[in-house]
Image (cartoon, rainbow, N blue to C red; front, side, top):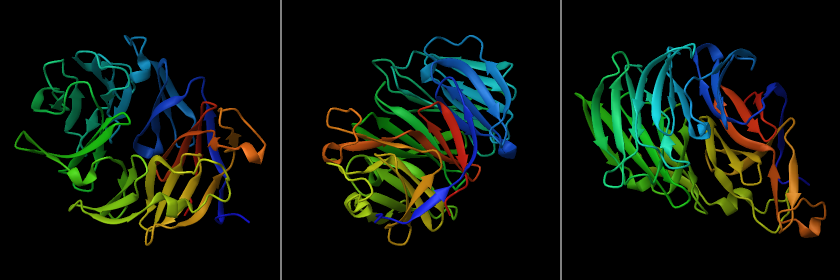
Length: 352
């Protein structure tokens, strides 16, 4: 008997690439923008995952894998944050409008640019040298002039991620030091002055997303801690549940190693939360008690069992853990999008 009821999702659209997508950025009218591992290529797709255009971005260095892509919500500007520069491009990706050169980030560090909700400012992080901290800067999106700056954390220790909040005047900045720690900060800009508040109540948890109500957001555990819900704008923990209770034995996937949350959790709507597990499962939780109510089964997603040595096995007595072909899961334009190990981008309806 299955551990949880199953919600089967039919595949809506898919597109296969020659390299794995690393950034998927929403644009107006259901379109999305993507870039890829190890390729200086940007691709624009329509709502049906059909290619609108592809561009090789000129002047890109060979370590393109570290570049991070973002775009303004009106689709007018594109930003590419690389290891040694930040470039602002026009909507078609054909013209570089502005470049910010900086010292090189170390491998796997850096931050994507962030366009404010009103698209009037662009926020970004520059790496510090050995004697200086990393630095937050804000530029005017029309003139590209720097209007404010703020010293952040110690140099070259963090990957940064900006998060939109329901309050137009508040931005969250997440700083992750690999598997060591995670820090969440609240940012505001008033009269061209940045204020920063470190949210110590959110230490070592990983940002998920906000509920459509805007009244709370979900956080994934960094290690073996609980899944947690925080209120907004108070940012106080209002609910949590330990992972052992969520998975409750993993009867569908018996293994020596227990399943756990793999850093990714999302509000699907105000009443349901989607969890991505270490085994590559998608579990739908009830917001009221955070208990699992169903396993989401997207068409075309496959699982492989592995033994202790990391080799595939079909012998149930030697299964150590599992892995699916899912790499990343995201909710974009009210669709469930997944990238897979085959270099595919797949879209499904939301599981509610």
